[in-house]
Length: 218
Length: 191
Image (tube, rainbow over all chains, first blue to last red; front, side):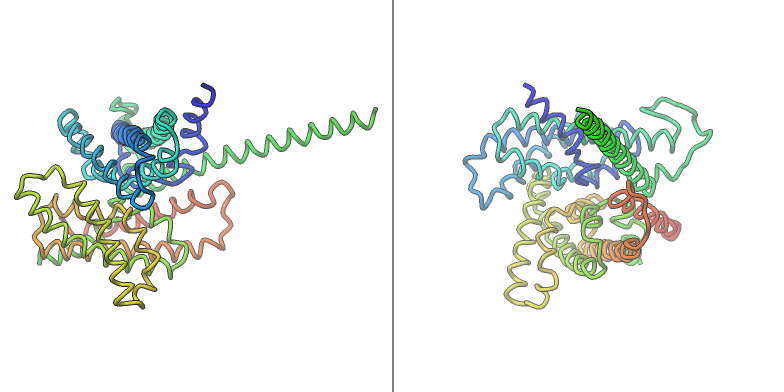
């Protein structure tokens, strides 16, 4: 149980596909003009990732090592086609705004990367958890990026008006804004992890000094 | 005239990397040196034109058979096979070119710019000639962005960047500024 929570958590934090591994950048930058679009893309990618992880982990012992990549790609492409048709049927507006980035989930390196690194080596249940963890990590970054861009570029979040057109930075919604916002997010995350590491180091140092003192006294 | 507009707008106005966000992985991955960036661009232009022509014919075939929904699966398989064939062919017949492009070819299969280009060609219902020029333009645009970006990054190596922003963060912000510069072209052509 503790192990499965660990797998889930790893995908969101230390293995985060976008901010740490820098995979799947194209959809992360292109589809995050609003929080809803980011969320939609995140959910679509996560569904494909979980389903392909399940199937690949089920057939992992039957697949010859030499032709595994084409086989994985066909499985992934099958699921992507399913999602594409489902979204066309049920969420037509979203399907139209996401455009070619739905079929392009096939070449999202996150999915093939997880198939290769995790699902092809582990049983089904951990593979589902891994897919969910990485998928949620991807989804959270996309939604956050979409929300930030929507707030500063359009004055709304999830369609609710915050301050309307009062003070918008229009460029944030445009393509350059995607690069700059994600860059700032990555920088912020690095800054947090660096300052945490330094705090941990200081604590250790203090501890060592204390123990040294104690030993000196005794 | 229409062909020229398509060609130019694919290079500058609708630049594949900076405006459409296709092919970001190689854009960030192989842009540390101008030399490798040039090699990668050559390989991409080559495969883009070839893949576009083949997928154009295949799409007509699929449409004629009423199998449009198989497009994604067929296209990705064709692109993967094509890249393999090109690699084998170049190795045998043009070893010098293979030496230059060799390591970049396998990377191209997972480059979303190729599949994206094939899908955009279909979306805009280009004719075969338009497809060829659109592909060449897209490839050149990708190369232009990649080489420019590599040039900037070579200079950035010597800059004193705050620690949290080293690596990915500064690369992304640089790309953002480059993208802003390319937005200046957007008034040029109305497509």
